[in-house]
Length: 199
Image (tube, rainbow, N blue to C red; front, top):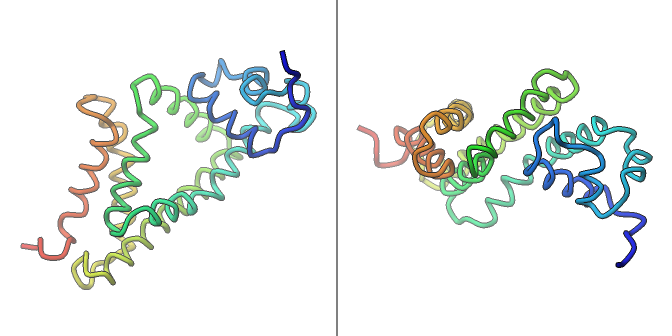
């Protein structure tokens, strides 16, 4: 049996924490579980971060700062800005890869909403995501994918509302995949603005 590495990067720890969170709810998640996933000792994580809460808050801060990077990464994979918006919807649907996965993610969301420090990071992440969607819509407008004079800021806000609502609505019915359900919701939200589809 090979010894555990003595040091891993914060990024590796955060990736391990994220993987553990996909398996475990907030009440089950411990520093020991994260440490095992990262291949280090719980003591090493306690020394570095101080507590599970502090580690998860650092993870939330990183997610908030990288929200725009996620959308830019998707943009690099798609020629069409509107297709990138749809790809983001499918990506968000990954939070509900199964009903149990969505239940775990909603349990973590409860912490984000109840704890002011976590909620502040959630708000930063939300604004960055909305700005990223608005940027995609501006690109779509300039590319002729959207009708002239489309208010891209208002449409971005509407898509944000639609996606968050659609994620919960999928949970009620669980028809098809969440990714497909969210993509369909975005298509419906975009339909009045897509070039050539206005009545």
